[in-house]
Each structure stands twice: as C-alpha cells, then as structure tokens.
Image (cartoon, rainbow, N blue to C red):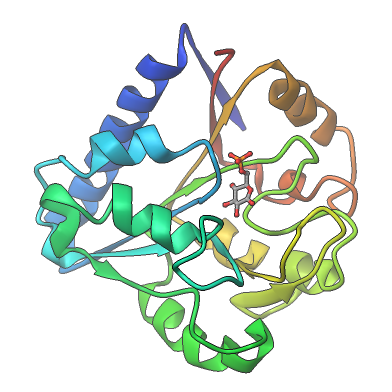
Length: 223
Ligand SMILES: O=C1O[C@H](COP(=O)(O)O)[C@@H](O)[C@H](O)[C@H]1O
C-alpha cells in the first residue's frame, strides 16, 4: 500500500481526479474501451465534480459503483443518484452506466442480471474506493452475513446485510476489487487514518479493507 497525504481536501480531490483521468486516458490509448468503478457515500462528490470535466472520450468508458444500497434512485441514500448527478454529467454524460441496482425487493433477486454488466467490464481499468471508520470498503462490512463470500468467494457481486448498514447492499467482491488494474482509496479525517493504520494489523474478517490494500494507493487529507 502507498499512502499519499495532501495539505487539504480540496487539493486532494482535484489531484485525484487528474490521476484517475490520466489512468483512463492511458487505457484508452491502447484499448477500445475502459471501465471505472467509484464509491458512493459522502466523500467522493468533489472528485466527481472535477472528473466529469476531463477531456476523455467518455463514450468509450463504462462507469459503475463499487457498491450500492438497495434503495430506489429517488432515495437520498442511493449511490446511483449521486453518480448520475455528479459524475455522469458534463463531458462524462456520454459514458455508459453499468447498473448495480434494479427494481426488485431483494438484491439476491437481481444478482445474476446485474452480474452480466459487471462481467463485461472486468477487469476494471480504474477503481476508486471509499472506506468507513469501521474499516468497511465498498459494502464489505465487518459482521456482515455474507462477509466470507465477499472476501474469499468466486462471485463478482455479493448481496450483504450488516449491523452497520441500514439497508441491504450489493457489493463488488474482493476478487473483482483486487483484479482492478489501478486501485485507489480516498479518505478524509484523522479517524479514518487511524482506522486504516489499525486495519493493517487486523484480519480481513475484522477489517475488510485490509483484504484489498496490497497494491492500492490511499489518498488522505485531514480536512
Ligand atoms: O456506505 C458507504 O460507505 C462507504 C464510505 O462512505 P463515506 O460516507 O464514509 O465516505 C462508501 O465508500 C461506500 O461506497 C458507501 O456505499
């Protein structure tokens, strides 16, 4: 793992957007298409605001979430809503969204259908992940019902229910995350930096993020 510390959050978000854009550009120089996976939650919005203006051939880019809360897009908790509003706009509006949500009661009902999109986009060219202070990444939570399957199983997508998550989730597995060609985590604040340090001393069952740290660049700013 490589840690890059930034003097402030604003600078980090802009620099990170440049790094992701340049990695996508490199892939598009040699391949017909590229794929980008991004987190939801409260942290990545400012990265999206910069990245959506990058001068790339976005029509050749597939964009997906690392994980989704099983709520309709009308919900303020929908990561897809964030993605559409702040990343799939401007120049990036011509990118193709690979969905991680479909209208069904349970994520398990749609796993096979949603997996067809993921399969076409893997290995993912560029992946940005978030991390919670509880050391979850994507929606791979400590104490989750399908934690073992997400950490060590062969599926691309796993449905999850966890004590720390108010609704069911769907998440990319550690297998898909670790296969990504370029991998980054973005975190803000002292609490998350301490959690990251702690995660490196714990097994993945207690600190799921530790399963995907090898080869990952972590971008951190205190505030
Ligand atoms: O619920 C989620 O949490 C993590 C971390 O979110 P943050 O609000 O602490 O930045 C996020 O990476 C994940 O995509 C999201 O579904």
